[in-house]
Length: 391
Ligand code: APR
Ligand code: PHB
Image 1: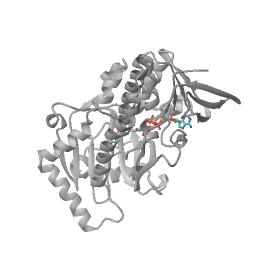
Image 2: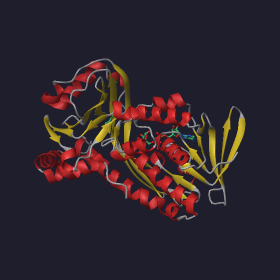
Image 3: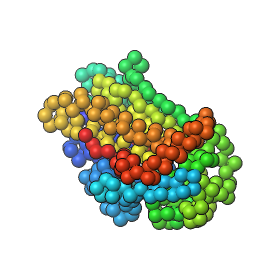
Image 4: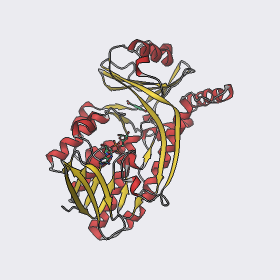
């Protein structure tokens, strides 16, 4: 078996890249460890930057997104019970984000991949990367007891944080940068109408809370919690009580309670690996970097990485020039680090840290008060939240 680009992982990064390459007439094969139902079923964030919406449109995948996606030109911030609105559209010359769950994005991507005849190998076990510095690379895997091998020009490592691609880069070449946060997010999905038209990010003395949504009838809520907290400690009523308390009287009064059909605790991490290229291997998405979910940048960074990688691969196949490929890591990392900075900053501003003292707490509330009172500060927040341009 032979292809031009072997893609490891069928998450958003892998599938966006596969569809872009296919559109450009470049042959690729996607190798995914799990099955479609598993990948599609994972509950993740749901805020798309314009960059990601434009990518869906460019791939001809935006019909349902335009019908069902919710355009948000603003967002809300609550500091100790007091809510203020940030008019992002007004502050950024009309830019906005679109609320559309990652599960919906995945469904659209898999449907298109199937319709367009893309080759995806599901349940590929023990994927291994070979000859990354050779004149041609190869990927091996096992399926149904048989060994397979695929020769290729390049490998795109789109296999997420726990994948094999990043680990195929020799340790002496790889540099990693990391912050692990000493808390998690307890998230709940419920079929109840959202408590507000736009999202609410909330800093409360008891910890962060976020009111988000998937549709006019489906809500997504999160509260900061201890990482080792058992889920059984959070029956629905306790969760709703805590959400209402943290959101404060104004927003909390509008919370509609209902049975949670999904409840889980996720850790928070900032992580970047450099470089994002080793020989014929190019990393994209969570395989190369993780952001904490505050700000919802994870999926959007996966999208911008593969837009850049696709450009570089197209340039190579059209002209033979390796300039784009050589510049990929630096170009992608420049945008990644800005999103890392924003996600880290927004997390630091809105969460309770164990070592925080009264001084740190006053600094947090003073910064939130400053943002509330300054359109310049709000503009800086809005510009990052809606997504920085691709450079
Ligand atoms: N072999 C093949 N596939 C693998 C392997 C492996 N060894 N390891 C992991 N995978 C697959 C996973 O099963 C998953 O489907 O790679 C895919 C990686 O997908 P994501 O983790 O979603 O990463 P990415 O595509 O970069 O998307 C990043 O989406 O999932 C969110 O939080 C994430 O928002 C972020 C964005
Ligand atoms: C979500 O709806 O799941 C969501 C929204 C915004 C975030 C994180 C998660 O910042």
